[in-house]
Every structure is written in C-alpha cells, then in structure tokens.
Image (cartoon, rainbow, N blue to C red; front, side, top):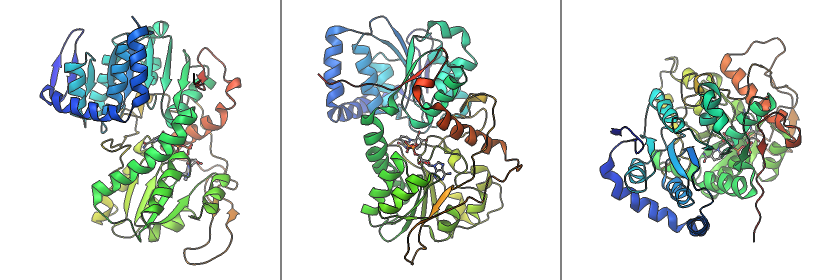
Length: 431
Ligand SMILES: NC(=O)c1ccc[n+]([C@@H]2O[C@H](COP(=O)([O-])OP(=O)(O)OC[C@H]3O[C@@H](n4cnc5c(N)ncnc54)[C@H](O)[C@@H]3O)[C@@H](O)[C@H]2O)c1
C-alpha cells in the first residue's frame, strides 16, 4: 500500500505495478476507439478546463482510459472504487503514478477503507460527480452536505444506481441533476446485455472451471443483463431456466425458448444459479435448503445482497457446497460482491438505497410466470405469488428491496420527477 498526503495524494496497493497497469490500459484502449476520438477532441477543445471531477467507478483499465480522457479535456479528476472487488491494482498504480489521477482504490479493501476513499474523493470538493451504484452521491447527500452547493451535475452508470437516485429525486432529496447513463440505448442494450452476459460466464468459468454444457443454469431476472446471460449460457450448451417477477418479461423469456419457473421449483435441479435482478434476497434461506450438493450460486447484480449471505453463513447448512458462493465478474477482471448491510459498501451507512423513510411491499398478484415442468410440455401460465401476505412483517433487508422496487415504479415517467435534482435521460446525437 502507498499513501501520501497533499494534492497528489493516493491510496493504491503498490506503485511498482504501474508499468503493468499501463500495459492493461493500452490494451483496453484498442477496444475503445470512440473514446480515443473524444480524447483527441478534448485535447483541442478542453471543455472541462478547471472543473473538479470526483469519480466513483470500477477502477479498471476501461475506467482508466475514461479518466485519462477527462483529464485531456481539462478536468481535475479524482477517482475511487465503486466496488472493492473490481479494482485492478496495477491500473490504480498507473493512474496515480503516471497519469496524474489521484486514485484511492485497493482491491479487496474493507468497508471502512472503501468509505474513506469515497471521502478522499469528496475532500476534493467535486463540481461534477461520476458514480456507478450511487455510493458517492449518497455519501455526499448524507455526510458531506456542505459540499452540495459546489456540485453542478453528475452521471450514474448502472441500473441499481439509477433506481436509488430516482427514489431520491422523487423524495425531493436529490440536490443536483444526474445523467442516467444506463438509460442510453447504447449502454443497457449493449453493456448490460452483451457485456454482462459474457463477463458473468467468464467469471463463473474462471472461478469454477466447470463445464457448462449439459448443466442446468438458472438465471434470476430476465432484464437486460439476464437475457444476455441466458443467451450466452444457452450458447455454451447449458439448459437455461429463467425466474422473473415481471410477467411480461417472464413471458418473453418463455417465448425466447427458456423454461420459466419459480426459484423454489428450479433450485433442486440447478447446477448454477445466477442472480442479476437489482433485488434483495433473491436466493434466500428456503432456496439454500432446496439446492443439491455442488450447486454453484453467483451474483452479477450490482449489490451482492441478491444472495442472502447471512442465511448462507448462519451455520445451519453444514454442506461444504454452501460455502462456495461466487462473486460473479462484471467484465473480465471485474469481480463483484457488495455487502449490503448498513456500514458496508452498498449499504451506505444508512445511505438512501432507494429513497428515504417509506416501506412498501411488493404487491403480490401475478408475481411469477410458471413454465412447463423440466421434462414436460405445455404453455406457460400465470400464477399468483405465495409471498407478500398482508400483515406479514418482513425483515429489514427485504424492506430495502421493496424500496428499490417501489422506486422503480415511482420514478417513471421522468417528466414527473420533481425537486432540485433530476435524473435525466441522456440524449446522444451523432454528427
Ligand atoms: N454485472 C454487470 O456487469 C452489470 C452491468 C449492468 C448492470 N448490472 C446490475 O445488474 C442488475 C440488473 O440490471 P438490468 O439492467 O438487467 O436491470 P433490469 O431492470 O433490466 O432487469 C432486472 C430484472 O430482474 C427482475 N427481478 C426483480 N426482482 C426479481 C426477483 N426477485 N426474481 C426474479 N427476477 C426479478 C425484474 O423484473 C427485471 O426484469 C442491477 O443491479 C444492475 O445495476 C450489472
């Protein structure tokens, strides 16, 4: 670890890795030609000259190219990690030592250091923010409110971050406008679907070295990420089952050729279960009690609370198989696992993970679409959910999940988002 104070401060694992980091950055640049064009233009036009920019992003070779481009545009950039497990230490070292980007990121950092790093970025009094998961913005609104008047605007990359911010905007709590990058077609249709589809499988294969062909692989959530994952897993020869709470998306999955059922139905025969929903406790205690020995569970959603890790670790499951939860990769080298409890990254020290104050339960009707049984035929049919009984008090964690879902519904349409802060749909124009 290296830590220095002052304007060129940084906290990275090992500055001697900088040369390796530069090789990774150059390799990624080959796949980012548009960013290269923007960088050339930025060098000429310097549109960000003099602006302080605080970024909380995955500290990877791709982000490094972005940070270098922003600097070329004149921005005074500081960077910290948006996920303790995705940081590439050589890249962090290269940014700090060779590219003039004060970087605060150490792979595997604990929760306290993670938030210290966010605060090190905020100490720079950013006028622009860039976030992936909304932890920076949440910390700004919760613990560093004195900095808010300086902030002009921000960006948010991922689905879950946009949901959190929309909830803040709907509550009138968001204090500056944020561009929801995830809503750009060129983001969610491509990064989420093809990028996450590939990287999740890449993570599973690297971590387990298990053949996918002929295996039962359950994808929880048939959104942009889930459909990419499902199609790539099928391409590897896996028998793909989809679970989905949105009936239309469930029907879509069924018509795309996947078996659709509840997780309770799919779990007993699953070889892999992968969550990618943005929801909480998607794989819960009752599912751990159903899975067979050797079942591999992984999360590719933004926070790792999609898997109830507390239930997994409570000692009630003696089978070693239960100990093998995989933090699935976001992209190659981008492992993700996000503790969601308060005080943990993603839990945000009580950060508004979906707005403030309200607890609302997911309405029950038509919660799941059920497909034909594994070896049978027949049309998918709708059925009523068993959960969400009126008057049934759910654990705090589940209530957080409800806020996510509530936020999802409340946030649209954007024209109705009120308050000082707005979540804006990016508009891309081509020359
Ligand atoms: N790993 C990565 O590289 C990567 C990339 C982009 C986004 N993400 C994250 O992945 C998650 C999903 O993103 P997305 O863009 O696919 O979102 P999305 O909103 O398009 O899809 C999520 C789907 O999950 C479904 N769902 C919600 N709760 C469920 C449950 N309990 N069981 C089954 N299905 C459920 C929803 O109905 C929805 O169809 C988010 O947390 C997002 O931030 C990860």
